[in-house]
Image (tube, rainbow, N blue to C red; front, side, top):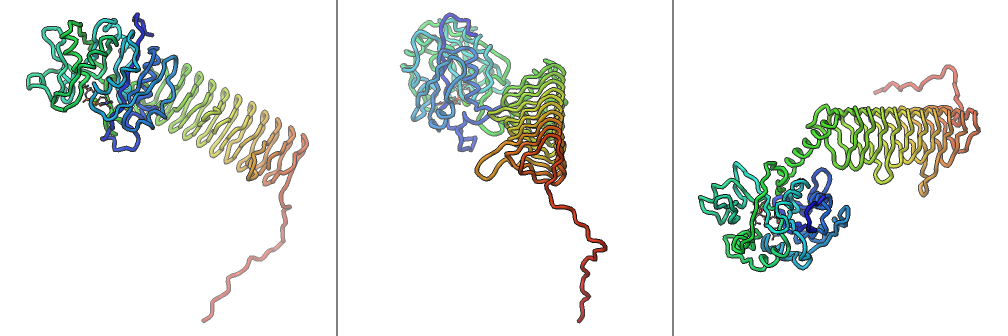
Length: 469
Ligand code: UD1
Ligand code: CA
């Protein structure tokens, strides 16, 4: 929460090309933990309840604007175009008409995804509505960054690498690219920028000199956590930041008590909530919103997305679950996999067993129902304690429309059956193996729909003819 008195607006610079990504996708739309880089930045702004977010687009502007339709919470999202790109100062100049005069402005970059809300909160507090506050960090190798030039303790200027003297290049404290500044001070300073420097660019960082000249206090809020200010310029950096972020998430889950077999082989690309005593084996990926109840165990190599798994369920190795928009639920104590696939609308009650090479889609399975081997249950309603045999399927699709199969409680479906929907198998009924069921069956009945077995006694198999020259 923003505890400063002034409202604040964020400006997100996202016009750069990102040449080194060598991608058709604009850099800020590359994904970290499954989410576009710039979306991480906007999420942090929303978490702090920024009044508005102004995203400056340029390269791939249309794609960026289309991808970012909204920010969570009450933050208003606006776009301004920067064309051509003449530097960071020029970028922020484009935002001026979209910025109210009464607030604090926080400048962020769309390619710096992992800045934490509490860090920005501290920066806002450092500005306090009257000062220019810079987020800084010390690097053993500061090459490429703008250096923080001080006189005594007082910040005097930021000097870019290319403009710096040899002595200035020795400075280890650098500007992170993030600042907080009152809009009423920022706007006139932006109007004074020029491009008289080695790169011929309008440097946002030159406003520090104007602040000093105008007698406005410049404060540095220094952090030590390099991940929070790390920018992405290349696929290697993206992968490195992904790993660092995932490891950090893994540690946070372990702090909560989640037992990870290997924190380096665990990926969360979305929101994962875990109850007590959850155990997760290696190489599991969680996407979208996933909730794991108390004592859930997930075996190795599972991909689990958009799903709620109740207490005590066991997901065996190599299971793929994705509820997409409809969701998937797995009931208490259910056993899923190995090699199972749960698709959107799979709703499994308690103690359901789904075994290897079984696919479930848009189907409800009541308590204790089992499909343990090689089966397809699509658009089906399956009653309590039903046993669905190996190799059996619901034929839900007639080539044009989908129909529902209803299998009432305590039904036993033999192996290799086709239930051609729409069809109802009455409670307690049995379907003989190999049946193609096209008509509904009565409760308690045995139904067999297959060719009758024929046996021909003493059948002589054809013989190979001897070959003559
Ligand atoms: C900038 C800072 C430098 C700081 C560094 C931290 C300036 C002049 N320098 O340098 O002091 O140490 O960040 O990473 O600000 N962008 C636009 N439009 C432009 C130019 C840039 O939107 O015309 C965007 C880029 O896409 C990027 C961000 O602004 O997201 C920063 O630009 P970049 O060129 O990376 O700045 P640096 O030279 O690294
Ligand atoms: Ca940069």
